Length: 140
Image (tube, rainbow, N blue to C red):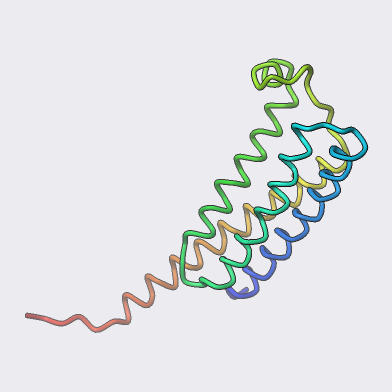
């Protein structure tokens, strides 16, 4: 599979993640009126979009893939921590959250984002290495 296809899949998964987080935002802000989780989910919803655009506009840069990997892994770790009583209390939450259907869907899609981003990053590094190898070396 070529890098353009991989990036297309990753961007699609990022948009899907944003959509899931948008639903989470709606539920937390308007149904539960949770003023901690709701704004957090809204930030995540919005944050994936410019990074996806950056990924599309900078096909030879490693930076958008690294940002995507770090941010997504951070969100997954935060999710895992808030599902334990000790982690929830440490973050100032009253109790650990339950594992909901949207939470599971978002984590599955986010694992796809991470794996795809790693794959695209490897392809980017490989392309740079091959390009460097093809460049004629000038002797002085």
